[in-house]
Image (cartoon, rainbow, N blue to C red; front, top):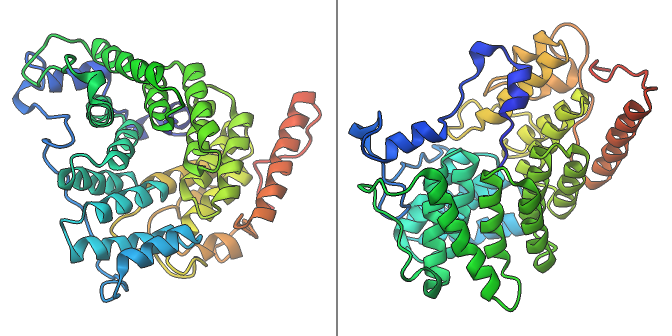
Length: 401
């Protein structure tokens, strides 16, 4: 749910922007009569064509006696998400029909800020088990993050029809050969079904609230989305993914400081949460503290290297987060550090950014990696922002020290 195209448009050259499809284009692709009528796509997650998953070639868990269990141990005990992903990849390769292995792989890749492999794995999970509710909800969120709104709505509809079939009986969605609904009608119909589900539940169903939050978010109704994610958190206060979704919604509604607090809460619960660290970096960009943003982004990238210290190259990894690298590059551009922005590409040894190995000024001496450092940077970022409010800030926060 983290769309920051407006930020990037301000930070990048116009010819570097590759905007996603608008509603009209995606609608034309889906319904007859549009410009994409020759290549109709199926938004249903169960019947749609699978997106192939690309496995990493070097996987130390392929011969592990219990790769699924090892992946869960790594994930639950604060290990690297990249290592957990490798373990889940091994489990999925060992049993390609294991819906749980595919679901866990997709969820951990999403948390690792690798949306493309996340979608591929989650698609496979719901193919293997059409009633896999956690996989359906995770896939709907991933579709939303990538701007695939019709697929997200179709997936949310399938989730609701599985969880609350009595709600959707008599309210079928049109098939792809129908042009009876506009995109807004499509959105509104599913939103109304989720609202009915919420009204009929005696207790808060956090997943219904998440679904509503996604729908309101896509409609640009951020206040309602915040209410939904907050309601879900009242039922699951220790859910770091929910804290991140709340933060992303606050950020997109222009409340960067509140978003930072939500991201910190997510990272206090799960320090290895790469997506939360990435989003924290983006919020730092939004309030103009670029050095802190770069440190958070470098910290996120360091977690993609199995081993965690950044000493190894990621050049041989197939599933990379181009999004992280692009964001770091644009951060350095805003810091007027073209020498560093030119190094922002997959395969660069992260130590180059930390030790001043490359010419010109020494860059970042440390990267945020633990709770104490997160607390320090929270105070540092908010203090700088407060100084801006008072109009007395004298520090050039865009320069490297």
